[in-house]
Length: 520
Ligand code: NAD
Image (tube, rainbow, N blue to C red; front, side, top):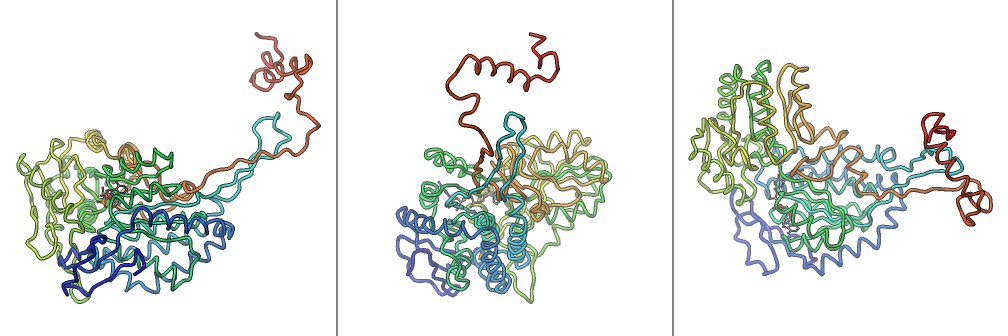
């Protein structure tokens, strides 16, 4: 079997014992083993990177339109195979169908966005020299791709957070190797296999499988690293990349606040909090995790939020029986969620709905609303990454902003209220993106950058920075005309030396007395 190709077993048939150098993939909704995936050794990772590197120059030479042609075929494949893609995704994540359904559409949109904008984002730029001393020069900037981008991704959105970063990198002209999460490698492998065999795309795109060791090997081999995951692992990736001075872009965790002002539409705010907190079982870096409500609106908001969350249907999802909230994808995360809720309850918090792990089979945590919480509790301080929100009453907007910013994270946030007032409050929240009267939507507004402040990351995806980061700028300073020598070159004759000081004074000074040397 080719390294990196998953063998999928039909669910629950008791897959045969995997070889030692492989990982088992489970369906979190049932606990059944659904596939085994061979692990790539560090040598295999280096060999794959070397192979795609060898083809990168040809890929770069195709130009923006040539590469968009191939990415357009990937878009068509994703749209034509939506059901297959979503089936695999549901199987390996335990998501409900509605939560999985966002991924192919987002990726198609992203391909079109960067395909149509790449020329304006990374096309060659012509720059006018700022100084008359450079009038004889033509200035150009060209953007050349890093040869190989290594992408390391998490398990919560297996395609958006892997292919979604590969798309701008490929559009920029890089070759790409992805290491998906060991919990969710199947959907991405399917897409890479499709690129190679069904689409017949150029050999500049591959994936490798394994855990931290494989990720580390990819950091060693790549020319640029795009990492999405926890801040704990992000630190390790950055430290390792520092050894080879490899640039990194880190999309890390969040603890996103939502502020509800007293003049908000409380129904909309409560429905948004329920969806923004529970969508994908709360396993979104941009999930609503903490809610601060101005005193006059607190009781109504809490009661409407509790009712909305209490109504959510949880479980295995199928066409005839849709559900709202799916499984937890990683068992480690369920343990963290349980710990945060227990820590809060022990310190006096109250669960108005939910509050505990659901008995098996499968890995589920009840959609939970906590009140009587404060910032001494893990649930208000650390990333919970589960279907849990903590709600606090605040005196006014100033206190809400102070509490919202009282965090080591700074990924996203949201403010609900009368539009102008909410917008003013949103401008004071310290994070990469704030939604006004909506939640999570900034991820789909790919026109503007998305990334973290503080310990939520370094660098941005989406918008112009989301593709430019995969390029190195090369400045071209081209002499249009000139004699045998420039006035500043050798020999340093008396006459030339005498020229340099008055000239630099003339062009540097901003008033005539200094230009003419009348003031010293
Ligand atoms: P994780 O940090 O445990 O793992 C992420 C990836 O890193 C996995 O592929 C893993 O195998 C790999 N890895 C582990 N150790 C490594 C090492 N030493 N060197 C290189 N690679 C290594 O994160 P996770 O549990 O998969 O994902 C959840 C986290 O991701 C949450 O903190 C969440 O907030 C974050 N996240 C951030 C964003 C964002 O855009 N900011 C988006 C989604 C998820």
